[in-house]
Length: 202
Image 1 (cartoon, rainbow, N blue to C red):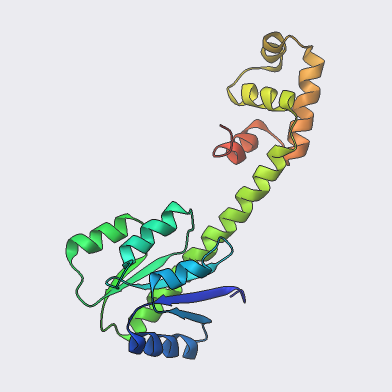
Image 2: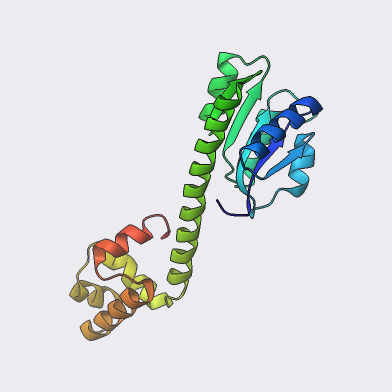
């Protein structure tokens, strides 16, 4: 596990913070604790990696409100909710909003550790995809405006001859643009190009 990965515990109950951090540290996890959602938001940024163990009911901003704020900021940290009085509607609401798990206090140590393990595995998947997306964006950013036009038409199924007619350029020029597109994006065929650009091209 990366040295940057942490388990963030957010709970206004000091005894819960202490016992949870002791359990997690004994299991080998790097832990950071916060007594309120606001305290956590003060250090929260896009570089954070790991997962959050989050109390539902807290003074000020509660757990679900923090979940909504993180989503608004585009921060994808898997969340494990802890609640002393969880209700089915609340559980459904948080899970639908992307929470990994919803556990009722007091939670057994083995159950919490299993949930944390799953959350961190999911976090690693999210991070890998983010790195991949960033790499694709960087490669697409190298395309010239004309190359991008040729790429879009290629992905729409037009042949080089048809693209040449549409853009009023020569067939050979289209082929050169296509070769540059493949080289810059690191692809070898249109299928690969379509796959990497499926979530990137507006």
